[in-house]
Length: 347
Image (cartoon, rainbow, N blue to C red; front, side, top):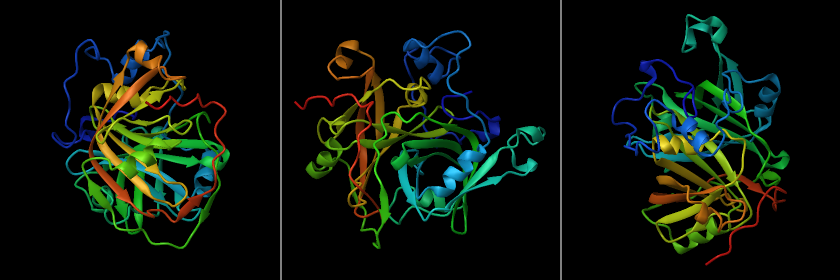
């Protein structure tokens, strides 16, 4: 299995140029080894037969009910230029629905037992969102997406990767992978709905002082990455306020804490450096979306400077989209995870 999404046939690959590949040093990604496996080995999780937590194409019954309860999901995908973004989609509970696939819809139609599920999302990104076009416009082929449904109040999350096609009032994602993660580093907070329309999206190529301040006090963000084939994954990162450090108008850094040893995000970055980040202002519903490139800093001396860090990730901004009041959801004060290490000291 590839870095974060199930491998299909050659016809599942994105067209050449849609998600540019990057050459990597041979020492970083040995020939014939996926980024996820290479990173796992480098991190010391190279026990024989170990492949990380299990992943499948079906949504377990308990997770079907979980999804129906959720008012939000984060969806990551590439835009027309191949840049990765993460977008927040919201709706009343029930806007996420699981639909079993017909045998003919599976990637392996000859193997009916391998038939998976689809998730219908009854929402689309707001106008001005970088993924409004890619997700809403009928594509020549399904769009690779990575999704994560997060329930902060109960510290639960579920990740789903697959291929998206637009519907009359949202998107339908044929699932390649479904898996849950542990509750580590999730801040508990309660949501409520307000009546509000999103403001006009503001575009830029560097972070303003106010945007850096939002990042500097964030306790949560979402990161979208993709492997060399274009399979997309979206994951969650959490910590105490200050765990993400804006270094200047174009760079930020965050620690990679001890997790479940899947290494999907870092594995993807070993294959392809593109990444999209999403920060949410939980108090007012603003969103801050960044696209750029990321690299893993494996220097133990650098990691030792940040409490709890196994390694660091450096991100370089190429484009910024800020949308005031992007979501009608608002959240209460956070109860921080007991697993959060102390935030690094500001310099």
